[in-house]
Amino acid sequence: MPNLKDLKNRIESVKSTRKITKAMQMVAAAKLRRAQEAAEQSRPYAERFNAVMAGLASAAGGSDSAPKLLSGTGSDQTHLLVIMTAERGLCGGFNTNIAKLAKAKAAEFKAAGKTVKILTVGKKGRDQVKRDLGDDFVGHVDLTEVKRIGYSDAQGIAKDVLGRFDAGEFDVATIFFAKFQNVVTQIPTAQQIIPFAVPEGFEADETLYDYEPDEEAILMDLLPRAVATAIFSALLENGASEQGARMSAMDNATRNAGEMIDKLTIEFNRSRQAVITNELIEIISGAEAL
Image (cartoon, rainbow, N blue to C red; front, side):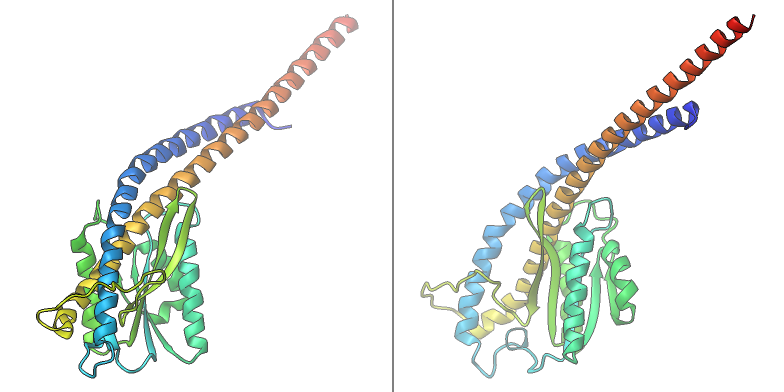
């Protein structure tokens, strides 16, 4: 039978843990509101931007002088995987699900004889992917000190990716992130950003425009922005997904701690009752012996 003191200490320990998980749940809920608003507000801009880009791409994509960011290098031998995860843990399967999708894609490319290079954003993804694909790493972006994601952060990542593309380090770039749906559902997503590809579900803007200068000149300016916009949108979706996953995970942890406290309390009461019963038996036996 467990010692009463040990049981009491364990109950107090679990109660302290429950206080921490409850506090983390409340903090995540407060952060989620801001992150969800930011993600939802960015979607109309990203959708409209992609629609316009799709229209421009359809008009200029077949040209021999089309920008490389649109037409590609003419090969798909080398793939750059930009894996975006959180800087912190305690958010359920959020980081694991993104890393799992990225590793599956990397395995698929390698099975087809392709070369894979990996750039990570967020140390949790780096830690998970590096165990299996450490030899393929080419860089890491640390956002530990960033309190609130801004467009400038996305521009920095985009500049790194575009610099590698201009240097001929890869042919195709794909970003991996979690699209926020609700508190309990975050969908791991892979989106190709180089060469430009219209995300599934988007249609080209069929409105007739007269462009000045021509489509190719406009694309030369807009395509780098398209990369930054896609990365920024993914970062915002990740931010909302992370907080939603953390809120859900901490809520489950708080509930589990409560259930454990109830079980330990019952065990403590039973043990205490057994001790009292034994003491009474000893007293009665001693009295009868006299």
